[in-house]
Length: 348
Figure 1 (cartoon, rainbow, N blue to C red):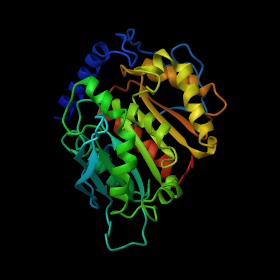
Figure 2 (figure 1 turned 90 degrees about the vertical axis):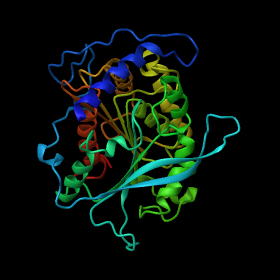
Figure 3 (figure 1 turned 45 degrees about the horizontal axis):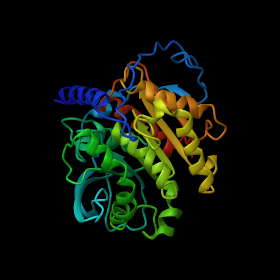
Figure 4 (figure 1 turned 60 degrees about the vertical axis):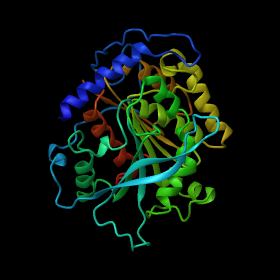
């Protein structure tokens, strides 16, 4: 079942690559994606990359996908939101799913938890990452916590789609581009007023003060969504995990077509916010057999050449032979969460 869904997702993504148009209204089909021949860190698709910032990441231990003796629980929530794609912004209700770690006690207000907000890709829904028929993320989290790889933490699987149903590519791109408002105005306040995170309260000041305990990640179009959170919600979030996707602030496939302008924009966001290189950490994941390789690698190569993005705040995680699927997401998350919140804090 898992393999069928993953394969189907890959095919749909490839169809989306050839079917959609750029943000400026011009039809633009990306050039054929290349498969890089990777021989050594530092020589990638003809470009020199920093070995200090680039890593070919290992697989998740197989035992982490087995049921765990100490298991967390997944709770479905419904929260009030708005359709930010409509001029009138009508009120709607949206669905999300919350992973609560083993031993989570609602009555224990003294124990605080790091939190990750996780966004699905195109044709997926909010619950797919936590569906054990499709994904091993829930047992992986259980084992990581049980084995001390990461402290107990909360993970929220959300959706950019107002109906939590598969939509056409253009509609999904429209919705994800405004999801930063839903996250900021509705989802974070709802979740963190009910569960024990590091936020003392859900005022702007309380969420800004707790940003070092908050992460956002996403896969495919969820990775595109992740880059929007870096741009619009950096004051609430320190850690970012874009998996198999680039930044589209300059237009669709901006990492491929406009890497210089895209990275210029990201640098300006940091400067305009009064931030510096110690105030954020990006863990970018991509596989060498992923059809999104070119557009992702093009942007990251440009970032690696800038002074702002250092080994302390930009980690380029590559899976040799990795594809555009949930298996790859499991591996990116396994390594990223340890980098962000693990006991050996490479980047903090």
